[in-house]
Image (cartoon, rainbow, N blue to C red; front, side, top):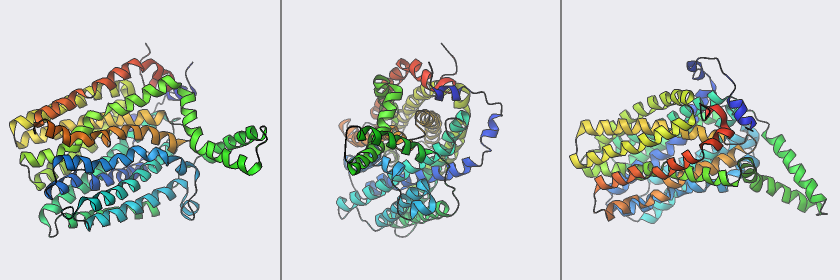
Length: 469
């Protein structure tokens, strides 16, 4: 028998698809998507090229970039965002906004510190400052994902798919446009990268102001339902004659740190849970390896900072944003399963264009085509992926459960991709072979998806798999 979540997903919605994107709530989600993507303008391609310009090796850049593995660990403190009320911030601005504001201030301070750091003096300070930025960004992501899912819940299945598209479009806008501006400033302004990071800090300050003044706190019955769970745990402990204070502390810890994960496993079963997490880890591993080294590849191929900013940054942002919104419509119509399967294949094939680019050399039309192809497949796969894990998330333990799945997805993009520079070096700098290898990395995840598709249909219904078998 299918779950209530699946039944809700099957409810027919008669509104035209264009009306899904006229929802005012999507404006808030886009803004927070921008905020979520922005830290990658600081510790993504700009960070890699900054280190490359300072003379660091590809292997060193790959290893330093592994500081982003903190993203894969944010599930360890995500339960705090579900349960702990920050003094003043959560009381004044709400549970979600309070935590988001704290994290955003952390990203701002870290970006300012990076502007004052010189990688030619030593990499220790660079690693520490980057870690501080990533920790703030990882915490912000937990709050933003929970905000989105509580603003447009699974009871609005098409709305949730649209929200996945809008948040992804916002993410790429936040990572792309400020990043392009940073590249441009680094190549033209006095002070180079220091001026670029000061510019990024200014953008982050504006994000903090918008969150502070304009975003509403989403409505949720999360607290009352968590209180019910905690009361049940206390009652069970009292029957075992545990002292009152100990019972209260154990109940709070159980509901905060254990219940979110126990509920997920209980709802899906252990076997399907392991399969879901395996798919999440493997789905974007090829894209992660390619993305970590993309900017370094562009520079080694001979493209200038300005050309990278124009093609990968400005044009890349425009096409990515357009494709994200288009992908939202596509995924609503075809279902998440077909979206994941088709986009996974296309995402892999797009990497082959980079292999051709490596053999041809610095050809601008080919550079443009490669970026457009990569952006389309990335947009397609990202929207399906975000919608997929959003539907799997409980409304009671939103931050905790989404963070676990997002962290597992980030594992390939952060920790596993740390070896991307080493791989290029081991291949004697053969970029063509490197990109070919990233093409076949998606295969295990697609095999796993096909194997568990019927069990997932039982959980998610028509929004996952539009046709019964």
